[in-house]
Image (cartoon, rainbow, N blue to C red):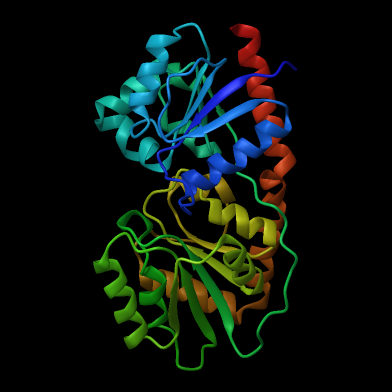
Amino acid sequence: MCSVKIPLITPAPPRSLYGNRTTAVRWTRFLRQLGHKVALEETWDGEGSGMMIALHARRSHPSIERYASAHPNRPLVVVLTGTDLYRDIRSDEAAKESLELATALIVLQEMGLKELEPRHQARARVIYQSAEPIKPQPKVKRYFDVCVVGHLRAEKDPFRAALAVRRLPPGSRIRITHVGKPYSEGFARSARAHMASTPRYRWLGEVPRWKTRRLLSRARLLVQSSFVEGGANTISEALAAGVPVVASDIPGNVGMLGEDYPGYYPVGDDGALARLLHRAETDAAFYALLQARCAARSYLVQPEREQNALERLIRELGKGS
């Protein structure tokens, strides 16, 4: 395959740990390994290229619009995030226009296709986000450790697990460890208040990815509590680590874990989450079922699978350009 010069646009700033930046950095590495010349940018610098890949239909719209105007016959790939899929493409004119300008669309889990009109589905494909395997670590016997990995912002419903563990019986060994950057001082104050009132909950703030992966590898469960997700990197990391997941029943999580997965709770329902956590802790057969179902989905997040999907996409678009 011929080398292609590709600006890869993400609105997430350098060195941030936002999901879009994580995806963009990983894709940059994959594409460079395939021999392409990739410029990872927050906005398009105007230089010529063979195609553009832009994450976030709304926030990257200025770059998408300028590129489509400058190079109307070159491939333009738009990657749809959770807020794109489940909010902006219905209500935001910039996001809507990005859909129209795109040569190809990418969604990050299979349920994402259902959010698109048929004419957009025809230009869309699913590419699951990958994660490197994590070496299993010994579990702490004193606790039934549960991880929450996600920045503290409204879309993540960040304190649902902290509320749920208040409902657990006194004899429960469940301990919640939450890592993530607060989007405001108000979220940080809330996290500190939950720690003060809930001994089972501890918030570590933003930590490096290597430390997050180590914490996850030692956990018995991941809680993914979001209101909106396009395809959570954290679920990919859990699947790669062999850590089962308990998740809100939103389409983005269902697309990652499968429609018949037994570890969902109604979004925003801390009572149901508490019951699910308690069952996972006390019912060995149920916990084993969660493990088996997650293991069956782990092939979706293999790095070589994601890289091969990107290679096929670029090859197909190159033939048509």
